Length: 270
Image (cartoon, rainbow, N blue to C red; front, side, top):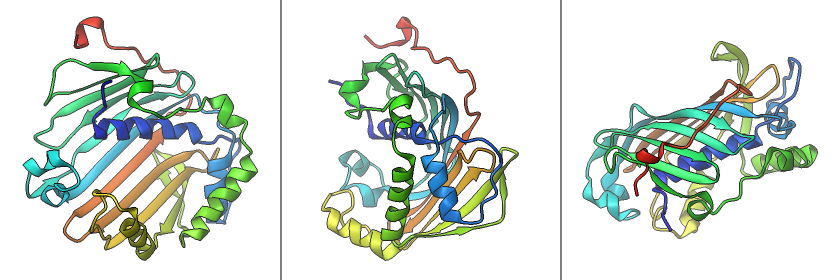
Protein backbone atom coordinates (compact mmCIF):
# COMPACT_ATOMS: atom_id res chain seq x y z
CA UNK A 1 0.00 0.00 0.00
CA UNK A 2 1.37 3.38 -0.99
CA UNK A 3 1.15 6.14 1.56
CA UNK A 4 0.61 9.69 0.37
CA UNK A 5 3.11 12.23 1.71
CA UNK A 6 1.58 14.34 4.47
CA UNK A 7 1.47 17.66 2.51
CA UNK A 8 -0.38 16.01 -0.36
CA UNK A 9 -2.74 14.21 2.02
CA UNK A 10 -3.59 17.52 3.67
CA UNK A 11 -4.37 19.06 0.30
CA UNK A 12 -6.61 16.17 -0.72
CA UNK A 13 -8.42 16.47 2.60
CA UNK A 14 -8.78 20.18 2.03
CA UNK A 15 -10.32 19.59 -1.39
CA UNK A 16 -12.99 17.37 0.20
CA UNK A 17 -14.02 20.09 2.67
CA UNK A 18 -15.88 22.03 -0.02
CA UNK A 19 -18.49 19.25 -0.11
CA UNK A 20 -19.85 20.73 3.11
CA UNK A 21 -20.28 24.15 1.45
CA UNK A 22 -23.84 25.40 1.28
CA UNK A 23 -25.99 27.02 -1.37
CA UNK A 24 -29.06 29.24 -1.12
CA UNK A 25 -30.61 31.86 -3.34
CA UNK A 26 -31.06 35.59 -3.13
CA UNK A 27 -28.98 38.42 -1.75
CA UNK A 28 -28.84 38.26 2.03
CA UNK A 29 -28.99 41.15 4.48
CA UNK A 30 -27.72 39.82 7.79
CA UNK A 31 -26.30 41.72 10.76
CA UNK A 32 -25.54 38.79 13.09
CA UNK A 33 -22.11 37.24 12.30
CA UNK A 34 -23.08 33.93 13.92
CA UNK A 35 -26.08 33.71 11.62
CA UNK A 36 -23.83 34.23 8.59
CA UNK A 37 -21.55 31.42 9.74
CA UNK A 38 -24.27 28.93 10.63
CA UNK A 39 -26.39 29.61 7.54
CA UNK A 40 -23.30 29.37 5.34
CA UNK A 41 -22.48 25.96 6.84
CA UNK A 42 -26.02 24.61 6.94
CA UNK A 43 -27.37 25.74 3.56
CA UNK A 44 -28.29 22.94 1.16
CA UNK A 45 -25.07 21.65 -0.43
CA UNK A 46 -26.04 21.87 -4.10
CA UNK A 47 -22.46 22.62 -5.08
CA UNK A 48 -21.32 20.58 -8.09
CA UNK A 49 -17.85 22.07 -8.54
CA UNK A 50 -15.62 24.82 -7.21
CA UNK A 51 -12.20 26.33 -7.87
CA UNK A 52 -9.90 26.21 -4.86
CA UNK A 53 -6.80 28.28 -4.18
CA UNK A 54 -4.67 27.82 -1.07
CA UNK A 55 -1.89 30.30 -0.34
CA UNK A 56 0.65 29.92 2.46
CA UNK A 57 3.20 32.42 3.75
CA UNK A 58 5.32 32.94 6.84
CA UNK A 59 8.45 31.31 8.24
CA UNK A 60 8.82 28.02 10.08
CA UNK A 61 11.79 26.93 12.18
CA UNK A 62 12.25 23.47 10.67
CA UNK A 63 14.87 22.52 13.22
CA UNK A 64 12.30 22.91 16.00
CA UNK A 65 10.00 20.50 14.14
CA UNK A 66 12.67 17.85 13.69
CA UNK A 67 11.44 15.84 16.66
CA UNK A 68 7.96 15.63 15.18
CA UNK A 69 9.14 14.50 11.76
CA UNK A 70 12.50 12.74 11.31
CA UNK A 71 12.66 13.86 7.68
CA UNK A 72 12.75 17.50 8.82
CA UNK A 73 15.75 16.84 11.06
CA UNK A 74 17.89 17.03 7.91
CA UNK A 75 16.98 20.72 7.60
CA UNK A 76 17.78 23.62 9.89
CA UNK A 77 16.98 27.29 10.27
CA UNK A 78 13.90 29.18 9.13
CA UNK A 79 12.10 27.91 6.04
CA UNK A 80 10.38 30.73 4.16
CA UNK A 81 6.93 29.69 2.97
CA UNK A 82 6.15 32.68 0.75
CA UNK A 83 4.88 31.55 -2.64
CA UNK A 84 3.64 28.18 -1.38
CA UNK A 85 0.29 27.43 -2.99
CA UNK A 86 -2.13 24.83 -4.27
CA UNK A 87 -4.73 25.65 -6.89
CA UNK A 88 -7.18 23.73 -9.02
CA UNK A 89 -10.71 22.49 -9.57
CA UNK A 90 -12.78 20.21 -7.40
CA UNK A 91 -15.55 18.20 -9.09
CA UNK A 92 -17.79 17.51 -6.10
CA UNK A 93 -20.36 15.46 -8.03
CA UNK A 94 -17.73 12.99 -9.26
CA UNK A 95 -15.45 13.24 -6.21
CA UNK A 96 -12.50 14.32 -8.32
CA UNK A 97 -9.88 17.03 -8.02
CA UNK A 98 -6.74 18.28 -9.75
CA UNK A 99 -4.45 20.54 -7.71
CA UNK A 100 -1.22 22.13 -8.95
CA UNK A 101 1.18 22.65 -6.05
CA UNK A 102 4.04 25.10 -5.62
CA UNK A 103 6.37 24.47 -2.68
CA UNK A 104 9.16 26.63 -1.22
CA UNK A 105 12.72 26.06 -2.41
CA UNK A 106 14.23 23.49 -2.65
CA UNK A 107 11.06 21.35 -2.88
CA UNK A 108 9.87 22.51 -6.30
CA UNK A 109 6.38 21.85 -7.66
CA UNK A 110 3.89 19.03 -7.64
CA UNK A 111 0.44 17.89 -8.63
CA UNK A 112 -2.27 15.85 -6.94
CA UNK A 113 -5.09 14.27 -8.96
CA UNK A 114 -8.02 12.30 -7.59
CA UNK A 115 -10.29 10.69 -10.19
CA UNK A 116 -12.06 7.37 -10.66
CA UNK A 117 -11.28 6.26 -7.12
CA UNK A 118 -7.53 6.57 -7.75
CA UNK A 119 -4.96 8.98 -6.36
CA UNK A 120 -2.08 10.26 -8.51
CA UNK A 121 0.66 12.51 -7.17
CA UNK A 122 4.13 13.68 -8.11
CA UNK A 123 6.68 16.17 -6.82
CA UNK A 124 9.53 17.37 -9.01
CA UNK A 125 12.07 16.93 -6.24
CA UNK A 126 11.31 13.20 -6.02
CA UNK A 127 10.14 12.03 -9.45
CA UNK A 128 9.06 13.16 -12.90
CA UNK A 129 6.16 10.69 -13.10
CA UNK A 130 2.99 10.22 -11.09
CA UNK A 131 2.70 7.63 -8.37
CA UNK A 132 -0.69 5.91 -8.38
CA UNK A 133 -2.64 4.25 -5.59
CA UNK A 134 -6.21 3.45 -4.70
CA UNK A 135 -7.70 6.40 -2.87
CA UNK A 136 -9.30 4.06 -0.34
CA UNK A 137 -5.87 2.61 0.50
CA UNK A 138 -4.15 5.97 0.87
CA UNK A 139 -6.83 8.13 2.43
CA UNK A 140 -8.90 6.09 4.91
CA UNK A 141 -11.71 8.66 4.86
CA UNK A 142 -15.06 8.19 3.18
CA UNK A 143 -16.11 11.36 1.35
CA UNK A 144 -19.91 11.71 1.48
CA UNK A 145 -21.76 12.24 -1.77
CA UNK A 146 -23.64 15.55 -2.31
CA UNK A 147 -26.92 13.65 -1.90
CA UNK A 148 -25.92 12.30 1.49
CA UNK A 149 -24.82 15.72 2.70
CA UNK A 150 -27.99 17.32 1.34
CA UNK A 151 -30.11 14.90 3.37
CA UNK A 152 -28.50 16.06 6.63
CA UNK A 153 -30.55 18.21 9.02
CA UNK A 154 -29.50 21.85 8.34
CA UNK A 155 -30.92 23.11 11.64
CA UNK A 156 -29.01 20.48 13.63
CA UNK A 157 -25.81 21.31 11.76
CA UNK A 158 -26.25 25.02 12.42
CA UNK A 159 -26.95 24.45 16.11
CA UNK A 160 -23.95 22.13 16.44
CA UNK A 161 -21.63 24.64 14.79
CA UNK A 162 -22.94 27.51 16.93
CA UNK A 163 -22.47 25.46 20.11
CA UNK A 164 -18.93 24.44 19.10
CA UNK A 165 -17.94 28.09 18.61
CA UNK A 166 -19.46 29.07 21.95
CA UNK A 167 -17.86 26.17 23.83
CA UNK A 168 -14.45 27.07 22.41
CA UNK A 169 -14.83 30.63 23.66
CA UNK A 170 -14.69 32.05 20.14
CA UNK A 171 -16.39 35.37 19.41
CA UNK A 172 -17.44 36.43 15.91
CA UNK A 173 -17.52 40.07 14.82
CA UNK A 174 -19.10 41.27 11.58
CA UNK A 175 -16.78 43.75 9.83
CA UNK A 176 -17.47 46.01 6.84
CA UNK A 177 -18.51 44.22 3.65
CA UNK A 178 -15.62 43.16 1.44
CA UNK A 179 -15.08 41.84 -2.07
CA UNK A 180 -13.65 38.43 -2.99
CA UNK A 181 -12.78 38.15 -6.66
CA UNK A 182 -14.87 41.26 -7.32
CA UNK A 183 -17.97 39.79 -5.63
CA UNK A 184 -19.58 41.26 -2.50
CA UNK A 185 -18.96 39.22 0.62
CA UNK A 186 -19.56 39.34 4.35
CA UNK A 187 -16.32 39.59 6.35
CA UNK A 188 -16.27 38.07 9.82
CA UNK A 189 -13.42 38.18 12.30
CA UNK A 190 -13.38 35.33 14.82
CA UNK A 191 -11.45 35.79 18.04
CA UNK A 192 -9.45 32.73 19.01
CA UNK A 193 -8.90 31.85 22.71
CA UNK A 194 -5.17 31.08 22.57
CA UNK A 195 -5.08 29.80 26.15
CA UNK A 196 -7.66 27.12 25.37
CA UNK A 197 -5.81 26.08 22.21
CA UNK A 198 -2.57 25.78 24.17
CA UNK A 199 -4.37 23.68 26.74
CA UNK A 200 -5.54 21.29 24.01
CA UNK A 201 -2.02 21.11 22.57
CA UNK A 202 -0.60 20.30 25.98
CA UNK A 203 -3.03 17.43 26.52
CA UNK A 204 -2.81 16.02 22.98
CA UNK A 205 0.18 13.89 23.96
CA UNK A 206 1.70 13.63 20.48
CA UNK A 207 5.26 14.27 19.33
CA UNK A 208 3.95 16.85 16.87
CA UNK A 209 2.41 19.07 19.56
CA UNK A 210 4.87 18.38 22.40
CA UNK A 211 6.01 21.70 23.88
CA UNK A 212 4.13 23.73 21.27
CA UNK A 213 2.66 27.00 22.52
CA UNK A 214 0.87 29.58 20.37
CA UNK A 215 1.56 33.24 21.06
CA UNK A 216 -1.25 34.52 18.85
CA UNK A 217 -3.89 33.24 16.45
CA UNK A 218 -6.67 34.77 14.37
CA UNK A 219 -9.36 33.57 11.97
CA UNK A 220 -11.17 35.58 9.29
CA UNK A 221 -14.07 34.19 7.28
CA UNK A 222 -15.82 35.55 4.19
CA UNK A 223 -19.14 34.38 2.72
CA UNK A 224 -20.61 35.61 -0.55
CA UNK A 225 -23.61 37.86 0.16
CA UNK A 226 -25.55 36.35 -2.72
CA UNK A 227 -26.07 32.73 -1.72
CA UNK A 228 -23.91 32.69 1.45
CA UNK A 229 -21.49 30.20 -0.07
CA UNK A 230 -18.04 30.15 1.57
CA UNK A 231 -15.74 32.63 -0.17
CA UNK A 232 -12.50 32.76 1.80
CA UNK A 233 -10.90 31.64 5.05
CA UNK A 234 -7.67 33.06 6.47
CA UNK A 235 -5.90 31.62 9.51
CA UNK A 236 -2.87 33.26 11.09
CA UNK A 237 -0.79 31.89 13.95
CA UNK A 238 2.59 32.50 15.56
CA UNK A 239 4.44 30.37 18.07
CA UNK A 240 7.67 31.43 19.74
CA UNK A 241 10.47 29.21 18.48
CA UNK A 242 8.35 27.63 15.73
CA UNK A 243 7.70 30.76 13.65
CA UNK A 244 4.56 32.15 12.04
CA UNK A 245 2.04 30.90 9.52
CA UNK A 246 -0.59 32.55 7.32
CA UNK A 247 -2.96 30.27 5.35
CA UNK A 248 -5.62 31.64 3.00
CA UNK A 249 -8.19 29.44 1.24
CA UNK A 250 -10.26 31.07 -1.53
CA UNK A 251 -13.26 29.42 -3.20
CA UNK A 252 -14.54 30.75 -6.54
CA UNK A 253 -16.30 29.67 -9.76
CA UNK A 254 -18.94 27.54 -8.08
CA UNK A 255 -20.80 25.04 -10.31
CA UNK A 256 -18.71 25.67 -13.39
CA UNK A 257 -18.41 22.69 -15.74
CA UNK A 258 -15.01 21.06 -15.11
CA UNK A 259 -13.36 17.96 -16.54
CA UNK A 260 -10.69 16.12 -14.55
CA UNK A 261 -8.75 13.36 -16.25
CA UNK A 262 -6.24 10.81 -15.01
CA UNK A 263 -2.62 11.22 -16.20
CA UNK A 264 -1.70 9.50 -19.46
CA UNK A 265 -0.39 5.94 -18.93
CA UNK A 266 3.10 7.02 -19.99
CA UNK A 267 3.15 9.64 -17.21
CA UNK A 268 2.52 7.07 -14.45
CA UNK A 269 5.39 5.26 -12.77
CA UNK A 270 5.36 1.49 -13.21
